Image (cartoon, rainbow, N blue to C red; front, side):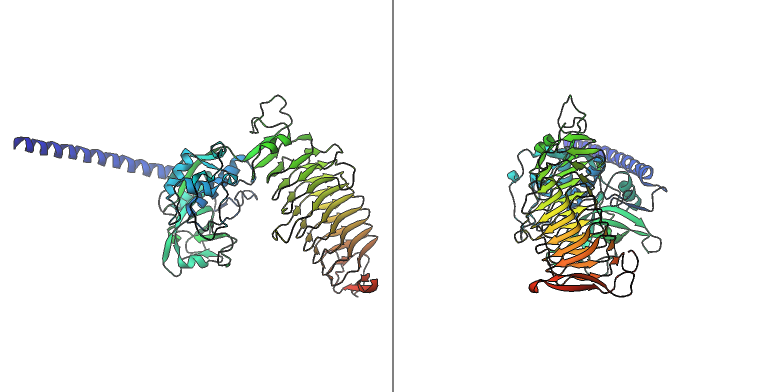
Length: 574
């Protein structure tokens, strides 16, 4: 009996000591937490507006994606934050794209209810996340299906981005989230997903009706203080439902939304990611690195562009530092090719064939001077050979080639979404600036196209294109020449000046020619075996009459002479 009493007393004494220690520990932690909160998050110097979509006019965010058919909102919110943090660390939005599928399935995601956010975050600390090409997200599925882990690329561990640490921000603390946004990066956060949120179409969201269906994770990308609204401001957030829901209904503001401070408990479970590091999906090239080593890192860049392309994976970026590179490139991967400065990053084809031959879809080329193709017909600065093209060329200088850009034979029937975008380039001193054949839905916008020996733009059998806001001048033959069924092309808001002929539309119908400035071309515009064109509010430099401006040409009926009219032509430059 005495032993039993002694044992009970010992247990009671130990319990009291433990409780005292726990109380002391709790008090210390609470005080430390309060101290850190006051030191870190109380700030009167926060800007009234901040957004990762607008860092001095530069958008560091990545495109809105669609999580369906999986309940993977946490994964998408976390990846959205990481992609911005990577691009900020690299220094420009190069197109970072990380694999949501890999993170979701490797951290325990399932087809029933999704994944635990702590599993995702701990996986990011310990193992990291590889690029999208390792495991593309299966959003083509109609219903969720479990995939084995070995679906991913076997070398994924060589291609991962990690975070140093993570934590929850203080619950309900608006300043804590603002401070994290400004000083660290985007903030993933959970909110109550009420029924009316599913019908949000724009504006500042506040809950009006319906019950909460679930917790939903989104990524806060910025904020705007606004004392004129009850909440004092709103968060700028990226969702993961795409732009269009599965039902076909458009959601949100192009997949984004704004939500009032304090709404739907969005500040209650917000996360902070500490730093990103690892293998970013970008390789560097510098011709000054003559002695090596060469591994494609910023510290040890490759010496040639070809080496970088050979070592890149699909979806990666090759960044070329200033220099003159005497190479002819074949791009047989879906990559981005970015130059440091279009004036001083020069790719010279040495008058030998095609300078850049693009053989895969979804390639971006930007910030490079591309010059000196071969002398044979259709030797080009850039040429495509892909039935699904989707080429983007921007901020380049393309000169001294037979054809500056040659867009060749996309299959619109098989790939109805395919298109090419040529924007903000200088294309000069070639025989033909841009030539397209059997490619549709081209967008040629905001370029300077001049001093070409034949035509500025020549298009054959290329329907549904847009030629807009370009300066097309001093070309020795035709500024814009459409022939062979370039039907329903829109030509608008261009300066077409000092060409021998400004515009020819041949064997093509139903084009719209609107609000262009036709200035001092030897012959302003004509059409040959063409009909159904609409001429709307263009300026014609030699026309000073109130009457409609006549455009002379022929129609298909026996090549019969015909006149179309710009009924409301402008009497001054537009």
